[in-house]
Length: 310
Image (cartoon, rainbow, N blue to C red; front, side, top):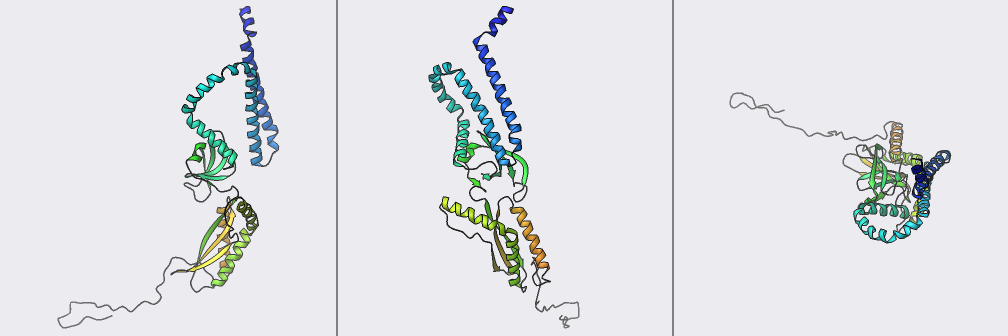
């Protein structure tokens, strides 16, 4: 028994297996400690995520490099065999290869990155992770309105970028144009209403305009697009029922819902201060000048007697 154990301990294959196991444990422990003590002091979420991914990839690369050096003599004889087996593997694992190709396209073309809000096909959400096979999103929309999270985590294959349109809400130009409609009663002071709307918009979203103009200039240099109106605008149209103001403004893509709430709240507050000079119109209808109706009532009076007219 002792002789058998001694032979097992001096077997080169066993030594290599133990060495590989030791390297895996050390690499795993090193990545864990670096993530825990190095990344914990990083406050920015995106930087912390990138450091975490870099350390993980560095750990995998170190293990692969060590294995290549350890088995370099064996690998040299397997080159021909691997070439033959590669053709069959490419057919069997074609979906995996397409997903990896999608990952390379995402990484090198900057199609999107962690933290971006994207829509792939009908799925919309914030990118929280990108792996070699899948992109993980925190879903937005569906049964909730606007840009609120649903709480569901969605994983989509990277091959989807070759099959579905990819909409990026934040790359190159992280702003959106939004619009609200404000109906005002006919006969109200429409000039005062316009001034109130312009003041409210400038008060709430005025800070975004400067940043948006700079980002738009950078986008114009990169893409074939024309200059556009970045400043907020208030336009007016008539309808049969009221005076309709269209308020167009630019906003951060992640704050569209909250900004719209603030705008509507401030508009109601300012309209209330006008003491009835400007009021919100509603879908109620008033009969202003009704025509005169003539109604003839028939009764069971004797023949020859006419009914009364009202």
